[in-house]
Amino acid sequence: MFCLKDKIAFVTGAARGIGFVTAEKLAESGASVALGDINGPSVEESAERLRQKGYKAIGVRMDVTDDASIREAVGRAAEHFGGIDIIVNNAGILSAASIEDMQRAEWNRVIDVNLSGTFFVIQAALPYLKNSKHPRIINISSLSGRSGGFEGSMCYAASKGGIIAITRGMARKLAPLNITVNAVCPGTTETDLLKSYTPEAIERQKKYILLGRLGQPDEIAAAVCYLASTEAGFVTGAMLDINGGAYMG
Image (tube, rainbow, N blue to C red; front, side, top):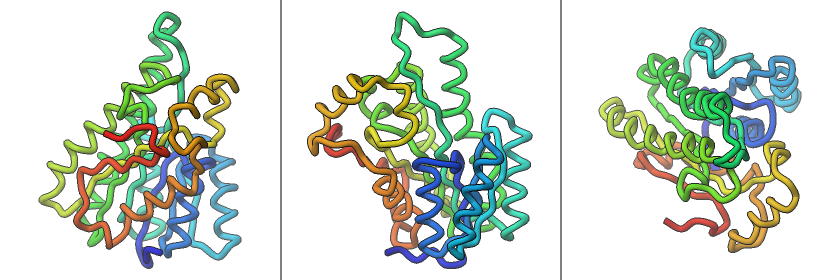
């Protein structure tokens, strides 16, 4: 649908789930894709799956809570492909701890991965984006960041709400460089992250969704491909809600 020929994309949290499907759709649209993930062997296997289909892809291990790891991974991708045009900040973890049961260590871990990781990946990629003719930043927030969440923990909602704030702020600050910054806000989507929820919690989630079903990773990936495209060149600071009608803000 959208042509991304000769574009170079870096997707974090890309070993599986929404991240992998997004990397695959970007590759299908013509982009060369670097897949980053903390699970090195798994992300390399995922990159190999794309290469077997004829796509240009590499897997790089990265820990978004470690600045040196981020810089090394982003630099390796840029060196391999000759730059970076598109950053997709997908790496994230889920928490379902209640307010009463939340421990500071868990709070800090979720904020560190989801929110701080997003910021510092952008920081590391910025020198390459400044040299791109097609610079795009796409952050993966959440329905929880828009509404405060239903079943997820407060640290998860706070981290995803923070991503929305970062997206808007960076859209303003980076517009003079022609870098667009947008966010996709998925509702509950069928991925491995849902393993932390009980079946009862998932059924409760469905009650809030007007379409009566969970989202699919390829539906989220399609939104990312649009925001990465030339056609979305006049879109910045936007929150694209993909949630089956669970939130209409």
